[in-house]
Image (cartoon, rainbow, N blue to C red; front, side, top):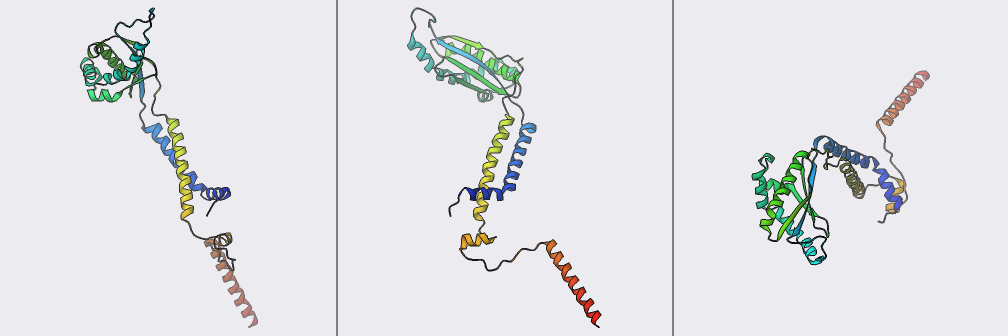
Length: 252
């Protein structure tokens, strides 16, 4: 059976309270978890530039091949930063961080902008000051160790360090985004459930359903009587009996 737009709208209107209930519950639950139970997470970052030995910036001769090679080597540097050798040095030189080598590797994220020699180191933590201390420590150790690890690299510069005193805003959780995602997902689920229930419901309820699905005329229809209607019918029946008894008594 094919449904047109009117049929879809009719189904949604029929299950509107189910849809609204699902969306409200999902958004409310997401909001409570995001605003009350999820701890905020802060991010601190530094930027590093690495050049090959004897590279001459601003000289008469510009070696484009060297620049291109440096750009391609960024992926190598990104892996070097997260090696055990670098992280062990950070752990040994900064015991105040109270982190293991594996914990540091998990925390440090390294990225680069396309076609540049600049790398960005980022660390997330529940404390912005601690995140800044971690990323600064890793950057400085990398600057000290890279010349001995990768031959030909002797020009490592930290373009900017993270300031632990900055009043940074948390990067996670994004409470508004969480609620928005919950709204969209719950709405899709609610629509799907409404159509599923309609698909599984094969009962015939009205004369229009008989004509539409069975293509037969309706000869009779048994209406549903509620408790209030049933009580009214009993009262009417009782009154009729009383009236009948009164007429019988009067005739006697």
